Length: 533
Image (cartoon, rainbow, N blue to C red; front, side, top):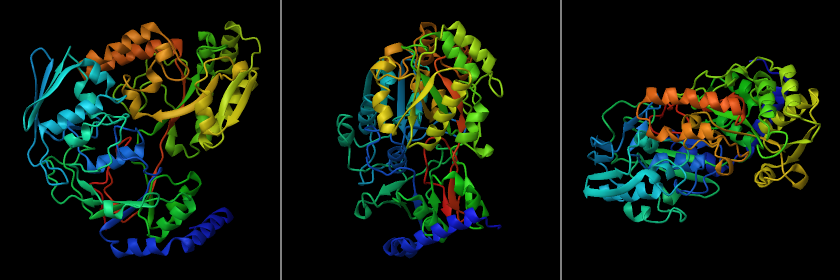
C-alpha cells in the first residue's frame, strides 16, 4: 500500500501502543487463539440486567446468555424462538404459548412456563413493556410447558412487541430472578441461551468471558437474522476493555484481538489497506441524526419556523461532516427511517438537495421572527454532534437568524435540555441527537415519534391529529394495514414538523479476516454463528 505521512504517523503510534499492550493479555489470548474470539466493544459492560437498563452492551450480553420467546429474522419479522407452538383465540384476546423441547437453564434445571410468566411480567414494568402491560388482563401458567396471556382487547402488535429490539428486549429469566422488581438488578447471569457467562474469568473493568453452552439445543431451522438455529462455533468469546482506540487498533493489527466495534473513521483507509483486516457493516440500519426543536418557546412554538428549518436543512451537507465517507451515510426523509417496513415517501416534497434557504427565510418571516436569539446546545465531547451543531449555527446565520452555540459536554446538555423555560432562564431552542434507524419502525416506543406534548421527549411536540393516528398502531393487525397507517402518520408529522432529520449513518466494525460469518442485524451483536479460521 502507499503510505502517506499521515498514515505513517498513525501506524507509528499504533506500533508504539502495541509494544505497551499488556503481556498478560497477549499470553491469555495466544493460549487459546484458535478457539477463542477476543472483541473490543463500543462501551464497557457495567450492568448485567437487561430489564434494568437499555444499554446496548447490556442487551448484547443478554442476547448471549438468555433466550427469547420470539426473535426477529433478517426481514425484521418475528419468528418463534423458545416457543414451539402458539395459538390465538377467535376473539383475539387469548394467546396460548407452548415451549419447545430441550430448553434448560445453565444451572441444570429445566425452563418452565412459570419462568416465562415471571419474566414477561417483569418486562412489562420496563418502558418497552408498558404498552403491552396496559393491554394485559392476566398472564398465567397452564402447565409446566404452557402459559397464556389474556388481553383486555385485541392487540395486533403483541408478537411484534415481544420480539422488539428497541429498548429492553424480552429475555427469559429464571422465576426466582424475574420475581425481583425491575428497579432491583438481577446479578446471577444464569440464562438458557447459547453462551454461559464465565464468572471465574470476570474482570470488571478489564474483561468478561462467555463459554459455549454445550447443552444448548438449537432450533432446526437455518440461522436467519436473530431467529432460527443459534449454533456456537467457537469455545469462548472474551470482551476486552480498551479505552484507548490506538491500543485497541494495534491489538487488532497484531491479532491479539479479532474484532473492534467502533474504529475511528480516519483509520478506515489503514484498515482497508491491511491484508489481514476488513471493515464490515453489521448494523445496516445504523442511526438517524435528528434536530430537536423546543416547541414551547419562540421561535419554534410557531409551525412556520419549524417548517423553515425543514426546508433549510441540506442533509448532504450534514452528512459530509458526520459521515465523510459516502458509503456510510445517506439522507433520510421518512419519519420511519430507511430500513423499516414502514418507510415511505408521503409528504416529502420539502426535501431538496442543497436545501432551500430562500423558502426558509420566507417562512421565518411569516412566523414573525424578529431577531430573537436561537440557542443551539453543542456537545463538545461528541464529535459528530459537535460538527453538526456548528454547521447548523453557520447555516442559520447565513439566512439572518441570530443563532448561538451553547457548548458543553453531553452531560451538561442532558441537564439543560430538561429546562422548558426561555433561553433567558437557562432554556434552549435546538439540540442534535440520534437514535437507531430500526427503532423508528416502532412508533409506540420511538422517542422521536411521540408528539404528546408534556409526555413527549425533549422538545415536547404536540399534535392531537397525529397522536390519534399513533394510538391506532397497537390495534392494527396486519403489516399492510400498518404501512397504510404509517403513511397517514407521516403526512401529519411533516406538516406540523415534530422534528427535523439530518441523515442516516452506519458504522462499520473492524475485524480480522479470520473471523467470519458474523450476523448482520440492527441494534444488537450476536456471537453465535461466527467462526474463526
